[in-house]
Image (tube, rainbow, N blue to C red):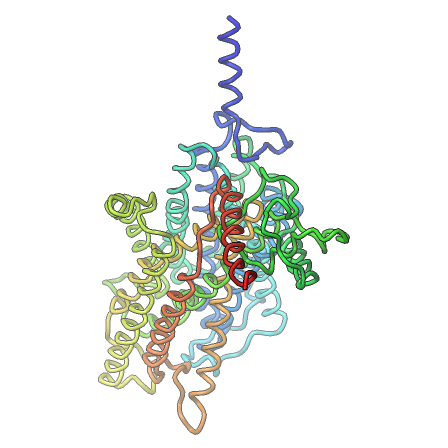
Length: 590
């Protein structure tokens, strides 16, 4: 009887998670009661509806700015990329608040309320005639009445309120999902390997609805309904997420990651003349069991953990774990930089790619194809590519590589970068063909519609989706996987930061190249009249930029060392300290 009772107690004890997750009250949680795919189902369904809401606004935004607010090619495109860039940059703030103060769950809930208020105001702005300029049919937006300061203020105020809200939801929702799997339980750890693929699948499933149904409604039914439906979808998604609250596992905020990183850098700088001891036990550590050391030894930052006897406060002495966390986050920055240019390419989908579609034949019988609906092929291509990759390519390649992922995350990212070179080459050649047809049919100066099917643009959209299946999925998983445990939200925000900076680079390049190519009496590459523009040159320039970026990526990955497992960290550090001591011996003997 005692044996049976002991067995039951052992079974219950083994059922508790080992990764430090708790419930909202801070109590330890059991695997059988919380987390796993049961909890993730609420998170994944939320993401389907939320992505429908976001892409219902962003996909067709350049068309609204052109047709309703009467903005030109460069201005409307840059307004889209500046807003999207902000959307992807605000997660840094959201990650900070989550990791340092409120935790991921409460940060997400508060941000959702801001997000919903921005969407509601935006729906109001497109619905009331007094909040937009009079209708204009002139193809040249320069000849149409401009929106007033009040109209622009309300519209863009709503857009940027929405951006602040997404800053708290984007970095936390994916990490909340990943937190539902315990890395210390082999079966759950295996499930997490597929989580990010299916996470992206859910994102693009919601995106597909936005890129087809919502875009059609906006172009052919009305902008009020076209924006009202995404707002209603966001409300539904928030309700779905809240319904899953009893099943979630949570992580306790680990303090400000920015402060911890700053302390290490300052402490190391203040002790730059101090030698690092050869024995790791002489370095300052709060609890070796909590250490998250890596197999890379940066002697300068390690000085922050050297005990000198005169250390005063956390800005002079930092534990080894804190030093290693900082080194790991800094180590990923070159990889992050290498993703900026591909993110710039992604920014072209909802701007210039869509604008190209407005110049082409879009009729199939009585059905009028919205130009922005072609972005749905990015989604379809990505969905198909993810399934083929996860179900067929990974098992096949795994037989040779013995890697559970088939290929490494950096290899997968590299394949995506190569795809971007090909995409922009294809886009340049397609644009050259479009321009030749414009000249052939005499619509260069008038900017009229070219009797060429819009589906001629299909290859560049399809290839972009395939590239996403490699680069974007791997990027999210890489920055989450390689970030220290207490900085997972900050790690996830690296991937969103990449997209944000990519959009800002797109704005900069578009404005700069548009301005430079108009000098000395030239017409310029990017004009309001795309039939008289030279987007083929612009896309060729992007292809060269991608090629140079591939070279940079290949260089930085040679120096990157994957994060070591926690259980191996002290052993790794001890071995490297011994190796450093051995290398110093010859010089000291001399």
